[in-house]
Image (cartoon, rainbow, N blue to C red):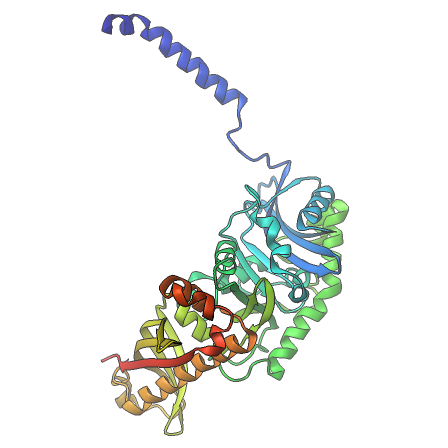
Amino acid sequence: MNGKIKKYSPVIYWVLIIALLCLFFTNDFGILDLHKTSLIVAVGIDSAGDEVEVTAQVAVPQPSQSGDSIKYIEVQGSGQTVADALNEINAKTGTYPRLLFCKLILLGENCQSEELFRMLGCFYRRNYSELTALVAMCKGKAQDMLSLPATIAPENATAIQKVLSEELKRSANVSTSTLRSIAVSNYSESRACYMPYVEAYVQGTSEPGGNGDNVGGDPGQQGGQQGGGQSGGSSQQGGQGGQGGQGGEGGGSSGQSGGSSQQGEMEFTARKTAVFADGRFAGILDERQSFALNIIENEIRLAVAQCEADGVHYTVGLRKADGGIKLKVKDGAPELTVNFKAAAQVQGAKKVLDPHNVKTDDVVRPEVLRAAEEEMKTRFERLMSACVENNCDVLGIRKLLHKQHYKYYEAFKEDILSRMTVRYDIKIESMN
């Protein structure tokens, strides 16, 4: 047997070589033809009656010796479905748009009246797009949002992705969601899901930081309205530039599309959260409610909260933050416990600085700790109230009921949010 193998080994060797050469010269192994392909990096979806309007931010590879080899343009299409709109974009660009590189899907505010998965269904088709793509809703129209020039990135799709980043998720400042997480949550027993709500502001006009009570205050609203309103016509100009085959000129490069000459660069925030029940828009959580949701849903590295003790405003850093919920049925009635514990450190105080006391900030006074606990309890209470009022189970309480107390599932599943009692177990200790 060994002799026969040695005898025919040269023949086998040359057959393998010829086969590999044939594969090499006849197959592109999935390599993209840059002259025939446009890469969609972000998609904006707006509702227009029975149709949908899709704005694609397209990265068009360009042969260049200067190093600037990519141009970003916005091209618009419309149709009965997202797929129809993308086909129109294909016809307008003369290239085949690929969604495998799409990292952001932005739903316009007017999509609130539509069933969520009518808007997103196209992206779940096999081999159509990656399920890790970020999904968010925005204030105003998505096509206007994608046309705004950004402060922190060459093109605004990247700027929006930065405010939806993993780092901000770990600081409880954003409720990051992907195509996968939205589908898993919506089609679970809880039948609810959430996504970040993106707003744009002219520099210097954003809402005050710190998860304050100023939800939609005048300065922030004015900034958002200026950003969305001024970009309406200019985004159409950018889209028409792409549609006319001159997208590189009309849309511009490096994200300077749609009216950047008429207004300054914009800042984006995503500290609010849009929630959905049974695939329908249910409401928007403000910054404090979103903060509480993020504490429960995500692994938190460092969260920052505010409280008042003895008439002084404190900014408190919460490390080793661990939040969660537990459900039990006691005496035939559901009872939910919201747990939270963290180690606190004073990061700022609205008072005159005493250099001798700065080194003791790691030792937080008991009255500040109690104020921080009360603040966290208030945020959790506001989140639970929003869930009950909107009948939106974004915390997955029905899923817990089905998993841990199945014999009560049929009896409680419809009205468990309003029937259950809620307890809060909150413990914040000093860092040292």
